[in-house]
Image (cartoon, rainbow, N blue to C red; front, side, top):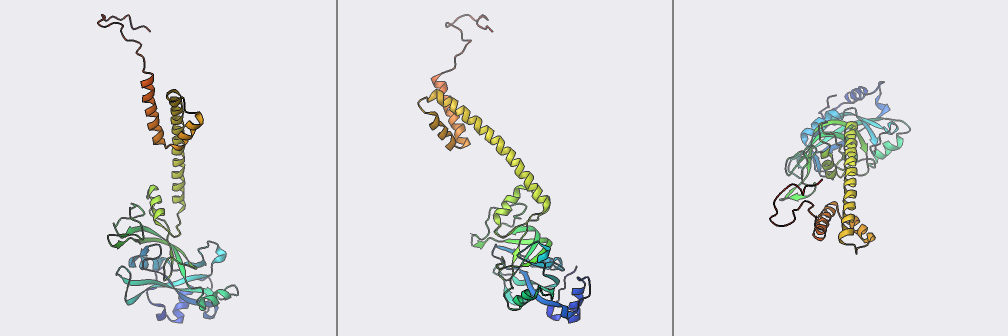
Length: 321
């Protein structure tokens, strides 16, 4: 559904009710609904050092029409309390973001039915207690402000919130793909509203990049079912590699113990076991190679087919099998 780009103040009661009734099954009258406005998100850097571009806000405006309002991102249908019927972009003349762009916010008009269950919530909204909101949405790209790389698909070495050559690192969220819901929360990520980002890059995203994405996030993150299946498959492959690694290490320990008992018989088995346990796999490999050289110096290999006597005429009698 296309977002209404006019401000809520410009809408008449009839237009507001017409928009609401596009979402309801039965025609609602004005005295049956409670109407209020909310700031969904803006283009300022949030507490997680993420920021929506103004273009992303405009795209999200269309995606949030008809989306439900809940509490604390609960996914239970019983927690649904309100719904968005219109959205618009609101700019404040002369106000700039911390990185120098004109400030813009995604606003929305929402409604809920006046029921006994909603009475306390309506009172809390009117009293300014229920005020902060957070949105659940997906974006395809997360662009690093320092290097310009897409942290979701390519990854980058910069950490959000740190300063590099005088420039703070933050990620610009672009190409919104979906809007799930909006919630009343106590402490939103965005100072003016709040946002919960979701990991939903394109399906061809390599699962190895998921780790880099998660490391760069400090807020809530969600994944799709297919991405979850890819992560599970990747973990299972890592578990197989881990098992192979354990078998390799166990074999190294056996070799080290065997060589140590030959070259250093004065070391007790318990001490030897403790040493092996404390060593890394690389250390065990180096230790094995060192012990092997020491064993060869103590017990040099005997050449079975060496000729006896210098200058002895070569014949084939020594080669006996």
